[in-house]
Image 1 (cartoon, rainbow, N blue to C red):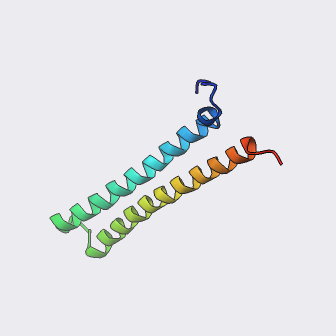
Image 2: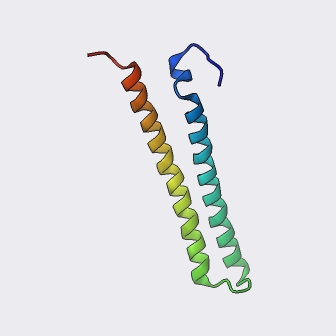
Length: 91
């Protein structure tokens, strides 16, 4: 990452980019898994796909989306906390 001179933008920029990419991938993967499971269930029982297996796919997709959301809240909280420790008021 380039140094902009602004501590808000430069603080752990590499971590911010990597964490945001991980969040995006978790969320997208979850949406794809859930959508494919729903489509496979609607189209019909493909091979050995049963209703129970389709629900497992949907729930897995939802779990991935929720983990992406939780990861987003966590890494932003952690980044703010570390920034406050580094640049916060000195007591």
